[in-house]
Image (cartoon, rainbow, N blue to C red; front, side, top):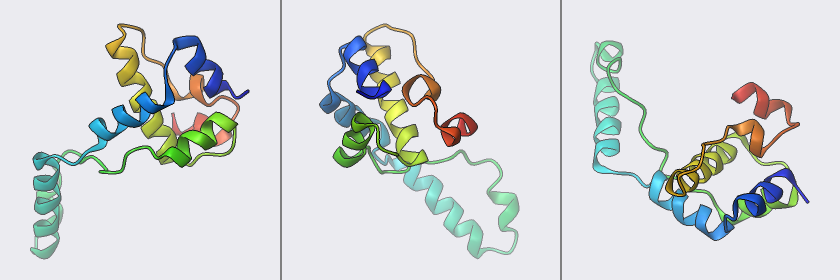
Length: 118
């Protein structure tokens, strides 16, 4: 049993709920599309570096997949961006349950890349 699976059982979180939360969180919104448009237009102009400074980072538009959840539950390696998306979805669910947020090390301990990314 992986640490991630134990965590979900301890907190009574269904993996399908993580998928749904991730869909909601990562979905592209009009402000994200506006940021991408501004960056694209800034690249075409001559003083592009100046225009990109004030923009915040848009959402990726890519939710957690069934395959990523299955790999995490089985204890198999999961990519860094997938771990981050899983973490965001889990923290969203914990926030709804009025519980404390967790960090990446709590879900995926013992992985060197996970410790460096957090």
